[in-house]
Image 1 (cartoon, helix red, strand yellow):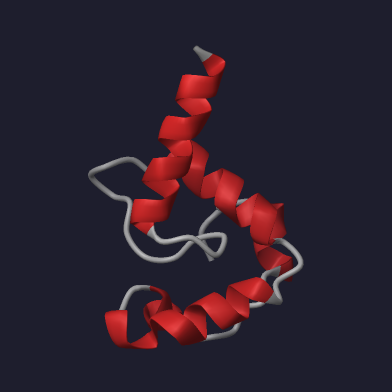
Image 2 (tube, rainbow, N blue to C red):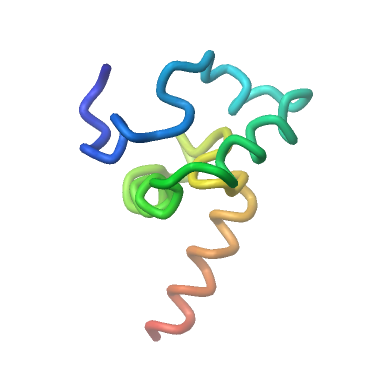
Length: 80
């Protein structure tokens, strides 16, 4: 397992086939898993801090790449 963060050991998706978080057909299943995850916020913050437009794919922290981009923009506008 890569060193994404200590939160990863508690993630609801830890022992699952993570391809469901990157394939369109499994979108709703992935969101349901995230919804019940106790470390969803940590996962989302990691994705917001570490993923960018060249490697930002899939569902992280219960949000799609498009939703994370929108959240990043809102945060940047708020900080400005």
